[in-house]
Image 1 (cartoon, rainbow, N blue to C red):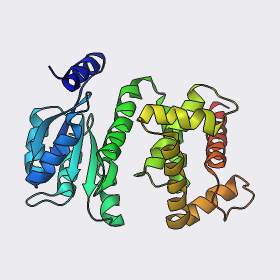
Image 2 (cartoon, one colour; image 1 turned 120 degrees about the horizontal axis):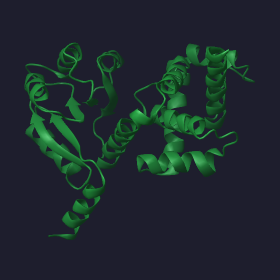
Image 3 (tube, rainbow, N blue to C red; image 1 turned 90 degrees about the vertical axis):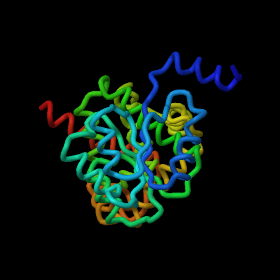
Length: 266
């Protein structure tokens, strides 16, 4: 047995392997995605489909944890698959990452409305793909231990403030805020504790966490300015027309959530 294979076997013994289905009409696409995951111990490609109809048939007869879904395919495309799977309630225990070459906001919004959790724009590296999978894995493994009301509060205020939900930064902010609340952290250092925590969970670097968070806030400022400004104004931010820092934004979201929780218990 090779060193790589032995390493995969050892890691897999300590973790639940996540089953992945790849949906892409291109033989090259199917092969490339499979190869990207081949060396990752806790993810295994257990199903492949060339269009939405084939993917639906597979999903009805076997469980998969994560679907890597190409948007543009013949016969039944990614949106067609998502819509049917949503109505048939086939995605209750399965999370979908959409893969797209075109950054069309309307198409992406539809994909997210029909149940997609992430969007990856092509081309992307194996590192980026694995980071996304790590986030989904963390969510899935911790859902039973998370307080659903807390998750609802965090997600609601992130989206209400204009943060794009399909970005890395959104997920990083959410993980950071839930961690602070779950651990009852009163004073936090974003560089010394928050970035390292999120980076460890998602198997990335603190620098990448910082950049992804700043990028999401930039998108909120540029694309959802009215919502972000309204949020900043409601929190009495010193300059509602200026993009806040990552630390300032986390602090305001925490304050908003604590206000909600106080009202709900009073």
